[in-house]
Length: 177
Ligand code: FES
View 1 (spheres, rainbow, N blue to C red):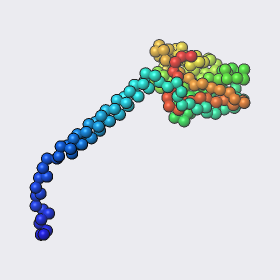
View 2 (view 1 turned 120 degrees about the vertical axis):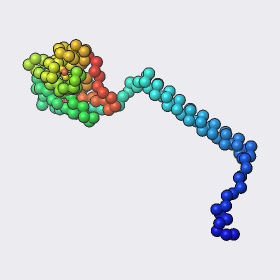
View 3 (view 1 turned 135 degrees about the vertical axis):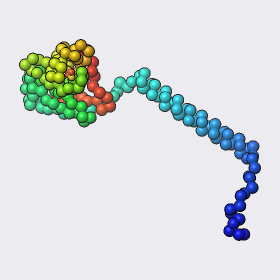
View 4 (view 1 turned 180 degrees about the horizontal axis):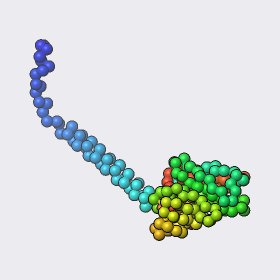
C-alpha cells in the first residue's frame, strides 16, 4: 500500500439503515423534549417565586452597640455587610428596644445622607430640606411630596446589647411606619 492510498476519496457509505435513522430521530426528539421540559420548568419556577414570594427570607441579627453607650439623642452610623448605610438613633430612655430606631441613612429622594436631629426630633436631609419623623416617615420637602420614607430595620435588645436584623438577600422595608 502506497502512502497516497489514505488521500484517495473514499466511496460514499450509502444511506443509513432504517433502524439507525429511527434511533437518531428518537434520540433527537427526546433531547428536544427534555430541553423544552427544562425550559418550561424553569419558567414556571420563576413565575411561582414572583407570584408567591417566600416569607422566610434569609435574615441575620447583627450586634450594634451596648445600650449604655447610646444616650438619648445620640445617633450611630452603621454599615451593613452589603455596604448599605444606616443610622441607629436613641429616642427614649425607657431602657428597652422601643427607645431605638434603625433607618436607612440614604435619602429616598436623590440619595443624599440623612442624619438625626435630636433637638428637632427628626431625621433631616440637607440636600433639599427633606425631613422625616422619628419613625422615618417623610414630613417635609421632596420626599414628603413623593410619599417616600426611609427604609426601616427591626431591632432587638438582649442582655443590655442592641442587635439589628438585616436581610441577607433583599433591601429593607421602605413602607412607612
Ligand atoms: S436628596 Fe434628600 S431631599 Fe433631596
